[in-house]
Image (tube, one colour):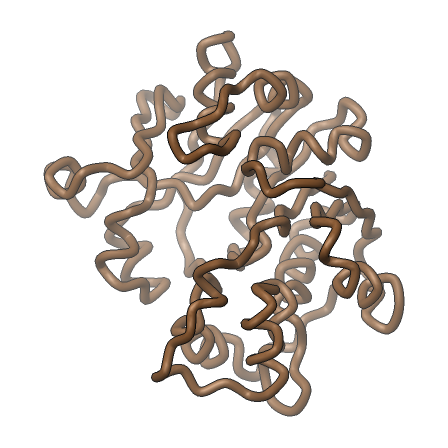
Length: 270
């Protein structure tokens, strides 16, 4: 199974200074550059966070991986073509010239996809290998649907972060729609058992057409959830598979200590 890892973001939240976050010099350099995926985790020099993401994909038998980067991310490419070259996954690269949204990031990998099914996931989230494996095992498009309360408990996310996750409207295991940025009232009404998205998907070639055609959002980007919504209107069905297990999020400097604790003693094998 192929996988597309979205690493084109500008890392604005990671660039923001957090006085309470204690970082090593190498972590500070990566954070200042907004290179979340390259932030070293662990003792000594550590391993780039992306190594753990690639290792989880390898554990899920997703061995053909494309990393979507920006033109300013040469250091990432040089690392993975040089001393950081993975041993278990075959790594390709695609360039998203401008940071114009996650739909365009997926579209940038169209030559790599070449008509095959693939997983798409964030470079700054570490998903359980079992969730990735379950998605890869589907016979069509789908996404991981995490129960809101369990995700908060297992991942240790602060309540305000969980409240901002996209709500999923699911009926008989099929995705009906995605509610981005739900209001506090809507999220409260949905309850702890509400299903939320962590932006990990299984797609086929039809998503590329939707990513090409989706209009610019109110935020000025071509966004992947809106491309999925467009695909739904065109008759593409998405299975929503129940997902459990901690998801690690490396979006902010304040996340680094918690992610480091979670990964202590864990050696990535990309």
